[in-house]
Image 1 (cartoon, one colour):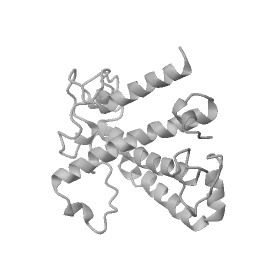
Image 2: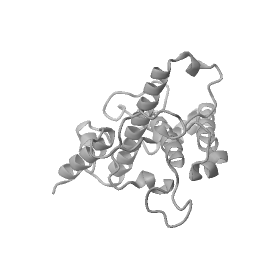
Image 3: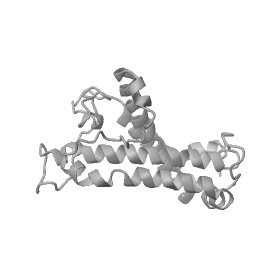
Image 4: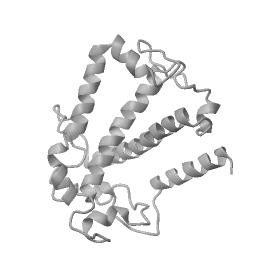
Length: 216
């Protein structure tokens, strides 16, 4: 099997995570403690891995596996950071990874692995602000980790309490629900994209699409 065939198979397998399946009806992670039972529809989880921490599947010891609340918080948080990281890569890469998305005023590096260091040296203020944003994203949920792991948290997953202007309250429940779905799916796509970049860097030819775009 060629590298391109393997990459295509992985892409198809990854895409299936976003497609509702009729073989099994399990509430999505977004339904946990948020009251949004319909968000995302059904999920593809043939091994019932999302049920391990609920006591409804194999669980040798109490709290041996994380509850859905913990998984949801982690997925939303790391999806957000991956979207930030992916944006930073093409915004500072010479030629924008072959897509022409480089943002004027930011480093124009041919090697995306070196752009962060250049950015930190050239614009320490903006770099510090982004670092603070990442620290808040990683640290805000720390106080809820224990309750999330056990499924006892009352925190709305993904809500960092940073909506000081109350913009969320101006949206209808339907739009709030839609935006949560959009964020979740784009976060998943960004995590796949970041993983592909590390594969692209370490295994030549492992991401044929990047070669076609002329990325280096």
